[in-house]
Image 1 (spheres, rainbow, N blue to C red):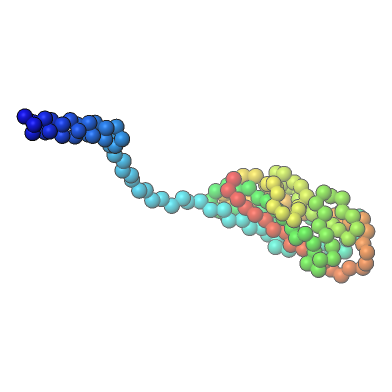
Image 2 (cartoon, rainbow, N blue to C red):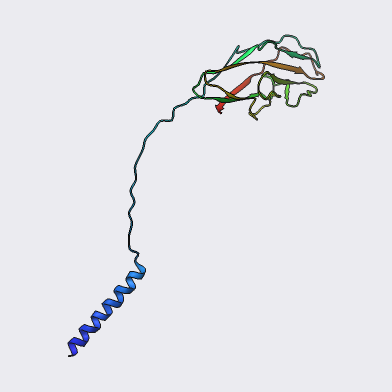
Length: 171
């Protein structure tokens, strides 16, 4: 009888351990798998502008000089609509004149302004805000640039050059 009692104890111990192990060991009642898909998003933004340069000539202190008749043409040669931002150098290439960003250039400074775009404004030294919105794929738009010379000059400067950059992004 002794061995039956020992066997019964062993069986009881196994049952208790088995029951408690079910509490701490989760049962997997689900499984997961996946599908791998591959795709190539199609669509490009390709911005261009013509002409690539403009000589304004001599500009008097405090004067505005404007291009007229949509001198510049902005092109979206891409396959989706784009927004356009502008920026310019903070100074002229010689670093003698400084870009003013609010339309009130003081001594030794100048302002640049767009005309003919959705959101015309003063061009700054950083891309900020969209000047033109949702220019359609293969679309184009004419615009002009306005240059405002500062209120005074500290010397008789030579010819000055600056660059304006255009950034096209998905609309």
